[in-house]
Amino acid sequence: MVTIRFGVPVHGWLPVEIDFGDFTLQLDASDVPVNPLDELCSALILVLQGASTEVGWHLEPAWCFLRFETTNNSVTLVVFESAAFKGKADEKLRVTSSVEELVLPWYRALKSFCTADYGADWPATDVSGIEKLTQLVKARKKRL
Image 1 (cartoon, rainbow, N blue to C red):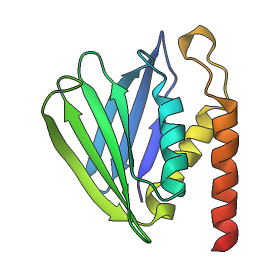
Image 2: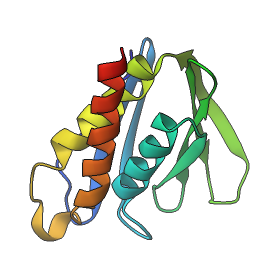
Image 3: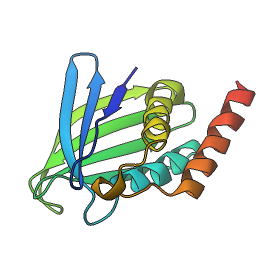
Image 4: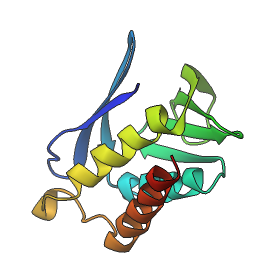
């Protein structure tokens, strides 16, 4: 199972730690040009609806990309890093597992982070997106 930790943001920088087995990635993500947590929320909604998608985390000037590739009953998470937005990307992690092991940890970390108000240090996450994501997660749990 993947573990995600969002730290306390400071002046538009959010510490993010991703752990999976022996793999650990630590990022300091910027909220410019867009809030990556809003992008993550939208991506998780798409994944729960069966679509593949990607989220970019701006590290100024580098980028980290999370690609979620969906198949019938599984999700593949691919983590790439690049020196520039359109630059050559190096694959850092590729893992395939269930939605419960690869998507729900992101949802839980996101929902937990969004319960706090960080003032000017980090923009608020779109509440309607979190509500829609929560509805999809609850509906999935009912089916299981």
